Image 1 (tube, one colour):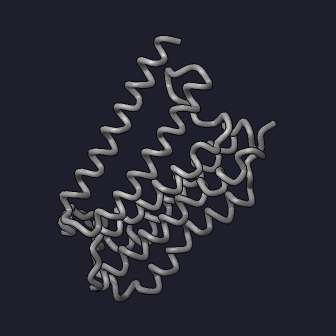
Image 2 (cartoon, rainbow, N blue to C red):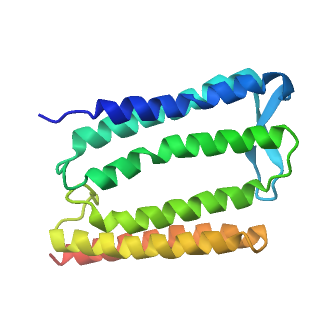
Length: 206
């Protein structure tokens, strides 16, 4: 019977909630409405009341983390073989929760932060990490409608190369104008569509 790793679940859940303490610590200094979304030119275009931001944002991340941990453990067919990869995967949301929360508070307190560059750095690192560990997963990654283990392994390998390449491009994009970041994201989506089209037609020949 598959079991849920309660130790990691509890620790990562507490990490997701920990930013609340930071928010309460800066409560009096925060504006009544906190910017939580920005356009490509670093202009805020959506706000949350500070009480909603302080409590609701970490709770949303907690919910996502619970879903991530539980579904990962219940669907993991090779727990021991995928232990390292699974642990790294489970720490993505808690890490992002703290980074995003801290950056949002710093911006709200008047610090000059280019949100676009921060987001591209996060995406770049995330893509590179995922690309590095994706081929090391054993029997967990599924491609809807795709059959054949050799084809799946090939898709994992190609996807990993794409992710690493796009991760590097995301990091380099912070040196250029915002339009470059948009083109890189569009390029990534285009890559994934082409990859799946290739897999689909290859699958029909099996």
